[in-house]
Amino acid sequence: MAPENDAGAGPQQDPLFGTNHFTLLRWFLAGAVLVGHAWMIPTGYEPTRIHDWTFSYLAVNGFFILSGLLIAKSLATRNELASYARSRLLRIYPAFILLIIALLLVFGPLFGRPRGIAYLGQAEPWAYVTRTLLMGDPLTSPGGVFHASPEPVFNGALWTIRYEVLAYLLAAIGFMLGALKRPGTTVALLVASQLAYLAIQHPPLADLLPSGVISLFRFTTAFLIGMVLWHFPKLRQPGPVGMFLALAAFLLFGWSAVGELLANLLLAACLMQFGLVARPSYRFARMPDYSYGIYIWHYPVLQSVLMSNRDMPPALLLAISTPLVLLCAGTSWHLVEKPALKLKRWRRRSGRLSD
Image (cartoon, rainbow, N blue to C red):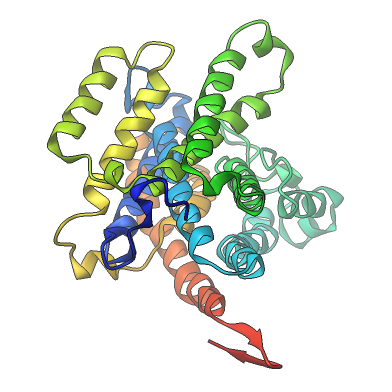
């Protein structure tokens, strides 16, 4: 790391390298998305919001802030880009592929058109599989799956995954070029991204650019906030005063043009305050990380439960779906994700795989 700031503190001094509560916080973020969609799918409206910022929207931003911090740490402490790329692929794709298999063998035959084995005879589901695995647009109903839902989409949560993958790629390029190794450059990129994000949300740019560009700058800004936190460890210790100032700023000005920035700063303060505690709980630190599974499985599970009664109240939909989502997420974690993550520690050396 560049020595021009106090990010040079080693693992012994930096709590980020020790036991933390980030897994627990990812559970909360994934849960917020689950709760939001339990209302959004049947009613088209999410009531959990502050200044019109929904909790699920902010939770996704929180994922990107945490990701930016941890990816910056990963890149700064690795000696090879191949190891970084392998780790990212093993984190994203195994569970993602399991979900796609479930679409073809479970959700499609049960809720598509036509149903049963005939569902697999259509071209559309297979085109969807190819498109989503290549990080294309997933916001469709392949083969009419969940066509009777108020939101006829197979999985309305998957669209953010491609931006996560793009952030991984851009971060790797930035570190290779040396840009993101310098704190000043990272801060400058954050400021530029935030200014661009503000500009493209208003005419004339908002009318000219596709929505994907707006999303790109939204997530890039959140990701860069996390990277800035890596460069400046003191910012990872907001304390009561920092928390109060961040909360007050958001409550007072969260309605303004910079409302999302203030929300992201409050999110970052909360994630650091409660993630890097002075006396972390070993139980929380060692809990299984179901968050990715909750995130990618909750939407089709909610849709499936809703198909039994399209007039089901959101609270009941949430109550019935949550255990099923946890079952899917737990299965994904223990049978697919956790075994795949163990491969991250293996690398080829002298013709053998070694840890």
